[in-house]
Length: 386
Image 1 (cartoon, helix red, strand yellow):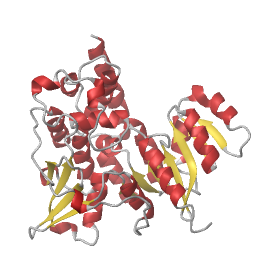
Image 2 (cartoon, one colour; image 1 turned 180 degrees about the vertical axis):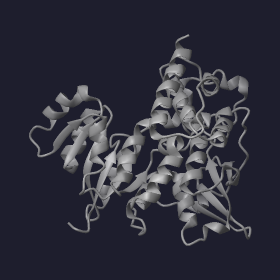
Image 3 (cartoon, one colour; image 1 turned 120 degrees about the vertical axis):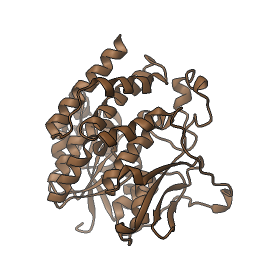
Image 4 (cartoon, helix red, strand yellow; image 1 turned 90 degrees about the horizontal axis):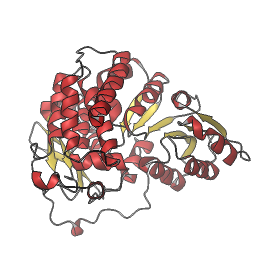
């Protein structure tokens, strides 16, 4: 048992969480799910607990605690509820790796707690670095914790940098599928529906991330995340729209060489690499067949049709609490769009207005970011209501 890594999965019922459990199931000799958490899906969380028998499960929404406890009354699994319980679960001494697969701002505090507990963090929650990149990188320098990226793009960059001197990096090239609306005009974008936006051409993701991909906000967040993960200024990060989603990202070096990581569009690959790093372990899944992809294309993104991408560059240039404002406004706007309260192109309009109206703070603490998140969300909800 000493050689088996104990894994805490924050967000085990979501897309990344369920795929992480697939890998644990494939390699029980290497990994064990010791902590599982979910926001509200207590039924699936209970089923996962029965199959994987973790030490603890935590449901964020406390109103579902009685149902979860009843569902697991006959098994020796500790059952807790609440955001504080999730954050505390990351610091359990037996946990080796924390997979942060929670969606949105909710992943920030648990990631901070995992850093303070010197854990290895398989980071799938991009909003953590979007909202608090400077604070997170500062905390990492003071601790024994480390972050290994799970996003396919950041995993690709991470792999391309292995064995290289960071001083030799000329630029990072983040690839983007372009989403379902890559070829639509501005007029057509005004008419798209929720169902249209949820039909991603290549990836199977949760609803929020799928909408962010359709608006290209996801790529803006990934740019900010890359800035902090790889200590790379934004002007050295380029976005390349690559509709086939086979080249997951690239690194260009000062001698003109470009290293790229290729693979099928399947999140099991970067999750597996993050869990096993620095090793590579066998996959049971079908690998990439290059003969099936004789046409790989790349193009520049259109910031006029997808303004959220330009807002991300503006937010990271401003620094301070501006990326936090960007993220909070976008989370509220996407939720409103999914609930059919606003149109697709209202998302960037709302985000831009909240960015302009929320007070800017240039030098921030974690407490400032918590307050900014609350205020920006409140402004966004008020704008939607009126």
